[in-house]
Length: 128
Image (cartoon, rainbow, N blue to C red; front, side, top):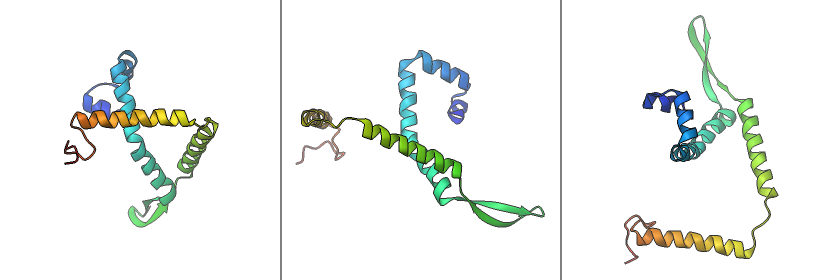
């Protein structure tokens, strides 16, 4: 957030105010957060589970490097995973009809993309 505001030459207060007033901006903000989440989760996992090397300074010089793990981040990740699991368990299972409707909508979206020349194979071809 801070870096994005610096690049845009605006304050964070202005960004939050703009998000409140402009639905399109708010939607773009949410998309950006959603896209960044996997990268942030991977970085958090790395710090918590794999650790990071940090220098140990003695006498003004780096004497050795030691690996430091973040228990706080690990606890946060576990709580988040637990909450997500609880939400999944609390949802009622979809009926066969609901599953068919979802699948039909997805197939229609893929067809529309292919017809618009934005096919999954990237060349817009119809298989020929």
